[in-house]
Amino acid sequence: MVALWTPMRWPNAWKDPATLSLLKGTAIDYLLIGKGDDLGAVRDRARQDGLHVADPEALPAGITMLKGEWPGVKMARGGAAQMGAGPTGVPWVDSNGWNIRLAMALHPETSVWVDAPPAENARISADSYLIAIADSAAHGGRWVLSLDQQLAAGLAGQRPDAVAAWKRVAAAAGFFAAHKNWSGYAPAAVVGVVSDFAGKNEFFSRELLNLLGRAGQHYRVLPKEGVSDQSFDSLRAVIYIDADPPPPGLRKQILGFVQAGGMLIAAPQWGEVPGTPAKADEDPRYSVRTVGRGRVAQANADPDDPYLWANDSVMLVSHRYDLVRFWNGGATASFYTMAPDRKQAVVHLLYYANRGPDSASVRIAGRYRAVTASTIDQPAVPSVKMESQKDAVEVHLPQVSQYVALELET
Image (cartoon, rainbow, N blue to C red; front, side, top):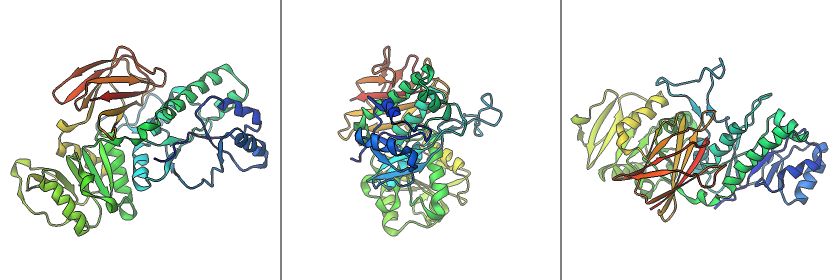
């Protein structure tokens, strides 16, 4: 397991080493400090305090740094009253989860950090910081804690409102540092996306991951070079959209998955598809053929719209296989992971609006006998109710914050 540090970008305005006292008792253990001579005393004191210290521009081996974006509901230029939305009218949510998961698949030996500082002169609420921390940590990465200028100045001046906000931010970082074992859980998935995620395939394949998450589809990232027969375990479908046909070995593996009952959603570049036309599954944008016990849905035109492909894949696979469904949740996302022994699971729930819901419900596929809900503010959320269904459970939540961890036991 890779080391899971809790990183922070040290504000350049904090020249006094005494400011390091803010970190006492927190989970923050890795500081990115500028190399100016005026911060030399801070660097020295931090090392004396047992903290890891690095130059933001020269990170040591073992860390993959991603350029991210501030997570949350994307606002239009008109301000808070105008939220960006897609053609369906659903609020457009920015998240770094897909990028973290891709980096972990491509570089499994490294810790993944997200660099997404607040916009210049922005004033960020404590709740927004919580979402920034949870959005990365829930997916197995770490957001590089970066303070807006006003909060940094307030903390330097020990303003009560700034200190109160800082305590909430530090508590959020501490919550995930206390649950490092979750990083060893494997993502549950309905579809697998097979690609090299590079070169001429980079934009489309990566944006497809982003938009699958926004569509509520649970996916597995499958780098082309590392695909094995076990890569398809528990999947309903595989998506192949690279600009070149798959190598013979990979083609054989995927068709074996299809013949056993799976589904392939492919671009025309896949090449000739065996089997017979599946007339009962006619689709205006895909030619569907039966191959063994499974099906191949091959697009009639070259892929040019990741948004359309993400939503088409959900419909082709069918909502009946959804792993997580929300009611009264608003702008939501989830990440469903299983312990290696499959006796425990954690479903991370993220609510990207300005506050958490007051009466949300969530359906989770799987047979479970018990559930515990926790938030950054409440280690055990009271009044959580669970109803068992045939092959799923439905969890009813009281008023909660913007991040909830549901720990489930079989």
